[in-house]
Amino acid sequence: MTEDLFASPDRENLAPGAVLLRGRALPLEGPLLEALDEVTAQAPFRRMVTPGGYEMSVAMTNCGEAGWVTDRKGYRYDPIDPETGRPWPAMPAAFRRLAAEAAVDAGYPSFAPDACLVNCYEPGARLSLHQDRDERDFDQPIVSVSLGLPATFQFGGPKRSDKPRRIPLQHGDVAVWGGSSRLHYHGVLALKDGDHPALGRRRINLTFRKAL
Ligand code: MD6
Ligand code: FE
Image 1 (spheres, rainbow, N blue to C red):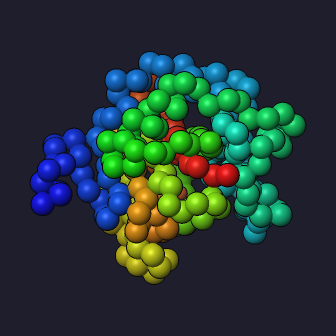
Image 2: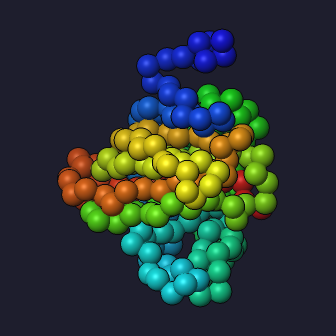
C-alpha cells in the first residue's frame, strides 16, 4: 500500500528504510561540482590507512563539522583534518540542501547532517563490504550521492555473510538509507574504466551523516 503511494519510475525501494532516488542530484549538478572543487582545494583527497595497515584504494576527504578518518589507531570522526591541521571545510550550501531534500523525499524529514565524507574512485578502486557504525545515532539515515563514472553497489544484510544484491549507480543517483537497514553491510565493486563528461576517469560519492 505505502509502496504504491510512493511508487515512481525514479524511485526504487531497496530494503525497508532504504530508497534509491534516480537522478535526484541532477538539478543541482553545477552547484555541487563547483562546491566539490572548493572543498577539495582546502582539504585534498588522500588515501588513508586502515587500522590493519592497508592503504585504501579509495581516496577520501570530508567537509562539515566532523570528518571520518582512519589510521593505525582506528576509525573515528575528527573535527580536524589530520593532513592540514585545520578544521574540515564547511559543508557547502548546495550539499546541505540536496542532502536535506533527498532525505525528505525518502521519508526522513528531520535529517540535519553534520558530516560529509567525500570518496574518490579511480578505475580499479573498490570498497569492501562494511557497516557504517562510527556515528552516534543509528536512527539518523545516511544520504549517498553518486557522481561521475557508474559503479556497482553491493547491498547486503545485517551479517557480513548475507549475500549482497548488486545495484548499478549512475551520475546523479541518490540513495537514502536508514531504519532497519541502517547497519546493513555494503560495498562498491572495482570501478570500471571510462570517461565521464563532467568528472573524467573518476567516480565521486558524497555520503552525508549525522555523526556527532
Ligand atoms: C560509495 N558508500 O558509494 C560508498 N555507506 O562510494 C558507502 O559506503 C555508503 O553509499 C553508507 C551509506 C551509503 C553509502
Ligand atoms: Fe558505507
